[in-house]
Image (cartoon, rainbow, N blue to C red; front, top):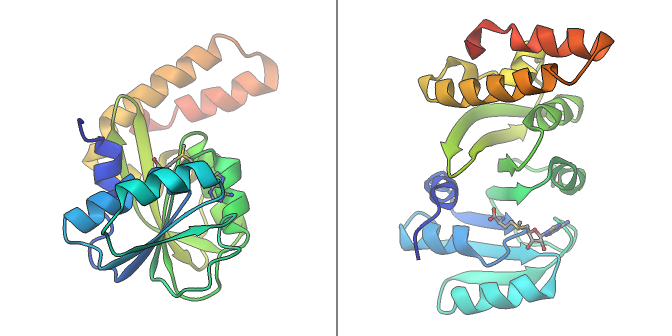
Length: 206
Ligand SMILES: C[S@@+](CC[C@H](N)C(=O)[O-])C[C@H]1O[C@@H](n2cnc3c(N)ncnc32)[C@H](O)[C@@H]1O
């Protein structure tokens, strides 16, 4: 089976961590690849649903991974130093982060939609972005590396990403976003149009 670039990108970012928990692990593919690459010594695959967890159990047979059925962090009592929350909508990720541990943990977050809403959530809930990556895998996916802490982001940072805007890898992604925003501009009017025009005008998009 062809490897997903998104899964590989997430697996590559686990390098250097001891115990990695994958919240919403589905079939357990991120941990499988991270362990195959030799990056992770011990994993916790966790999902709210039994069915994906059963599939993860099959895929991770013989791997040093504990499987836990849990809504987000609620039933996780083991210590870990990296938590992955990926492949979900921004509202599900935010709801999971509302119960994230207070200890020093690094998070890899990859929302399937509205990354700007996730960045605003992080500002409002005292999380700090320490790195950002974009990966193209039939669609553009942004991965945020986050810790607890304070940051202030202006509107440009919310849309472009405070770190991504400084990276060359963001250019094709920004061009894609600009096309999307131009399509929105054709449909909206009044105050909404003014707002989207302002976003389309960010020079990094050009
Ligand atoms: C689309 S899959 C993404 C799988 C994988 N993380 C990835 O990036 O490919 C989303 C998974 O998250 C699980 N999920 C949704 N809400 C959850 C929650 N509150 N806590 C734990 N798992 C959740 C679903 O059951 C599903 O298996």
